[in-house]
Length: 104
Image 1 (cartoon, rainbow, N blue to C red):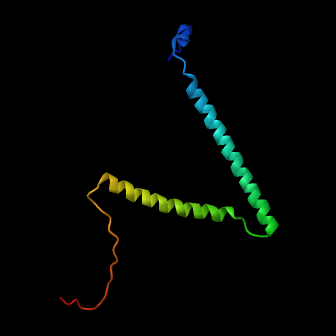
Image 2: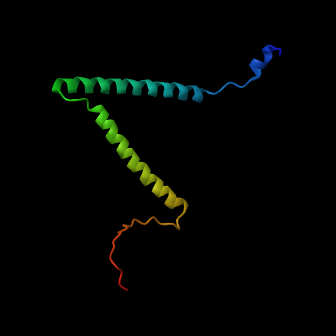
Image 3: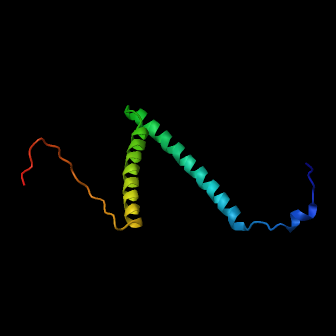
């Protein structure tokens, strides 16, 4: 395999516009800002819980947020399944298993 260097080809390629580069820099700045925010919240949680003598609150908050996210995701799935197939309705029912006879 041979590599050929063509200097004119680099000048003929279209350069990306300014918006993709700006978006990349904004995305990087947002990631750095969120990482700093997480560090600050973690440090504040550690300081406050050490001051009060409590166990850290962040793991509990994460578990609560995960539980809420699961409920919201289930509701979204139910809503989207209803929108994609409007003829099928979801029915909540209780099944009671008894040993009694059913009289008609």
